[in-house]
Image 1 (cartoon, rainbow, N blue to C red):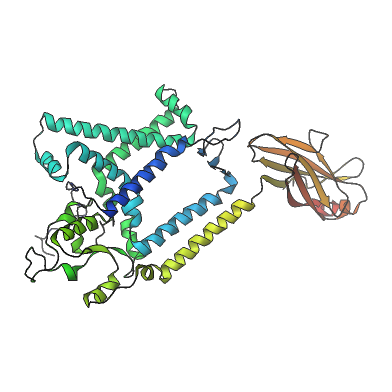
Image 2: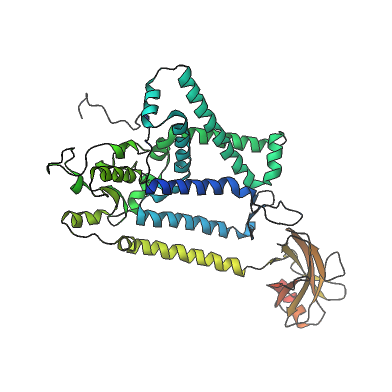
Amino acid sequence: MSKTDTPPALYAAQEPIFPRKVSGFFRTFKWWIMAITLGIYYLTPWIRWDRGPNLPDQAVLIDLAGRRFYFFWIEIWPHEFYFVAGLLIMAGLGLFLFTSALGRVWCGYTCPQTVWTDLFILVERWIEGDRNARVRLWRAKWDIRKWRLRFTKWLVWLLIAIATGGAWVFYFTDAPKLAVDLVTFNAHPVAYATIGVLTATTFVFGGFMREQVCIYMCPWPRIQGAMMDEDTITVGYREWRGEPRGKKHDGTTGDCIDCMACVNVCPMGIDIRDGQQMECITCALCIDACDDIMAKVGKERGLIDYLALSDEPVERAGGKPKPIWKHILHPRTLVYTFLWSTIGLGLLFALFIRPEIDMTVSPIRNPTFVTMSDGSIRNAYDIRLLNKHGDDREFHMSLTSEEVLRIDLEGTDLMSVVVPANETKLQRVYVTARRGDPSATAARTDLRFWVEDVISGERAHTNSVFNGKEAGR
């Protein structure tokens, strides 16, 4: 490289993008996706669900203080975090699966950055007008009209951003009560700080950094190349059909009339006719724009379409491409599907077989056993009982063993203990072997602790051992 050569820049300055309004199947589909996803996000914390007298009646609740997660009838405790880990693994595998089969459909339809950017662009178009009007406003000098339009747009953006941050904190406590506390300025400072951070990020990312987030901040565009191959269905341009471009209809040009409609509707500001690019999020708006133009000029739709690179030689030769399902059902997607479904079924199985009573037994090792005044041998155990019900429950405790052993509960003459609703209770338990019994002299005697819910009759057990005199030698 000569001294006069300038090294390529690592960052390209942002150029304003003004996507034009477009209508069609994919645009309508994206509207539905946006409405559904935003509806789920904003409304879910307000869905009520009876959780008893000690918890807020909220269907979806992340209770950090109680270290639990509630999702309708499902309750996840800290020791069951493997459910959350499993869901995260399924989310990752699902992302790999859909990218391998259909390209960046996550980015184009359901990514939060895409959804909120679509919403912000809709507000921008509603206030400032379509593409041409926004371009003229961008180039105009700052006068009263420009300030009015910009301030109105930024104000609506800010309200959406505040609603976004507010909806997030509602997932962590009782939504109606927190809403009142926020309005009356009685909420915890952490709630206001969280709303402030999310408001700022939503306002900046959705309003000003749009495509920059996808290009420079998100790692997925760089990973997707390893997930895709020539059989992946993605948005592409049929170059063999569209080139050479031109508006003539004398048979010397292709179907592409170089109207730039595909470029003008692209939220990333790229030209899909240049081939696959890292910036493309496969939102398919260029398909709607091109199909509309093809219909107007009397040519076949599909110049820009969802297609696979492996079909191009076949189509160029006049053949019929493979059905979409044959592209999707190839070995890699089948492996992803198998792994994804296996983990999902495993989580469902674990969810349905988990008991409502959890019991852990910790033998006291210091000392291993105690010799009583009458010569009997006593072991001590700490038993932790978890009550997953929404009301207090009485649990009856017992043990079984091949030898004769007696069980006693510290602090009570009864054989039962009351555990408060949605709490754990640590109970010290003593197991005694009479003098001369085989279990008193043997090194180890197997035993099983049982706990029974007096109300429901449900039982749970945990195996342990009793240490006799031989254990101390």
